[in-house]
Length: 140
Image (cartoon, rainbow, N blue to C red; front, side, top):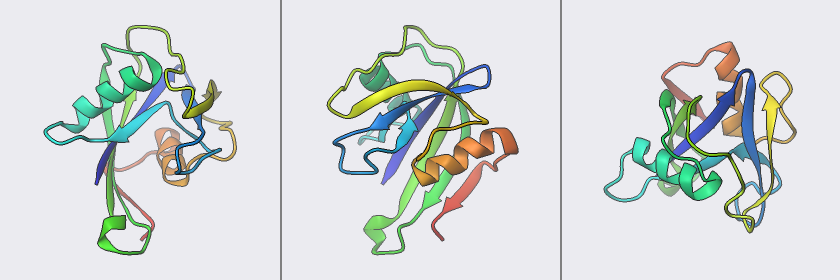
């Protein structure tokens, strides 16, 4: 199941949302915009759609970071592929568009991230400063 993630960056800070009532990693900080790639949609298109739906931002200039193959160690349905992007230029002011899924949103230094962060996203966030390959894995 593919998903797209956008880390909005401003200087050395990243915009994160605190997940709430989603059924997955609630009470963890996560990419401000992320979600499943829908049928007939590219990962780039999904990233742009999710940014508009979740934080009200458009006209994103996306930069591809990594494709992460991820597993939870169970059935094949637990296998995932995640496409991570950064964005430093957009139109609009970020805001919580889905308050039923987000308890908070804020800018955090990449060197002092809040705790806890969704674990596989934390790998990519650290990779933004330490380096990350275009193909990465999690859970293997």
